[in-house]
Length: 294
Image (cartoon, rainbow, N blue to C red; front, side, top):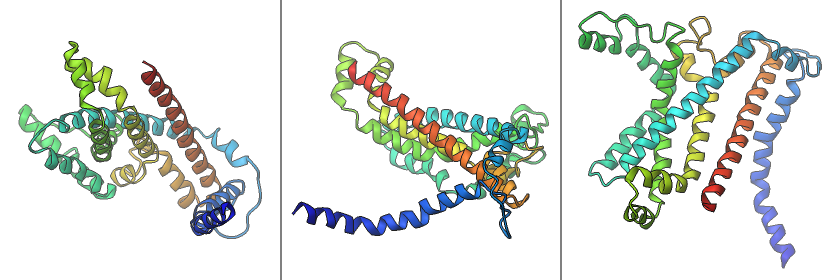
């Protein structure tokens, strides 16, 4: 009987396992192999070992791009979660229009990044953009801030747009987590004299820790892997000041025709996302355990 159950399970798992192996694990292994070669995408290639990886870590352009990508990813995750949690707390209240507002806040996530980039490019134009024209009317003077044409502003413009577009799923996760907090715990805290703010930090926040973990991972993963928004908005400019790792990998592969080098860089990006994910999950679990123990 046990063997029959075992073979039945294997029978049902085999098709999806084969699909995963063919379309996921096999390409990963193949990419790992090509990252150890000087393949250009066509023709012959030679096995060069870890030469690509050694070259990448001595490439000043790559290292600058890595730092910039980490800054964008971490900052985007921070502000996405702060804004998302704040809005979720407001929407969790018994408001008549909360269902409508949930849809409105989620709508930006439905818009493709490329479409959003072109719209924001018009809005942030230094000479005739909607934002500068609005500021000019409010301040009664001509404002020509180069939001996407200056290295000083472009990173923050990308972060703001990313937060605006990524906030929808984060709000949904937080609302679901908040609705799972037992009302009697919050009422007990208020009866014992805790203020609403103290009740939130001492009762609600520890209870929604798993939701925070999921939301932060969404923000980190999307922020570090971001490609289409900065590419469509600025092309990585001006002077590569908004170039991310994904854009740099694209240039290695399709502008320099160095697929082996590009795959090495993509593996570093993948490893970076995995390490950050494991680190944050480990830290969040320690916090959750500490909260339960308290």
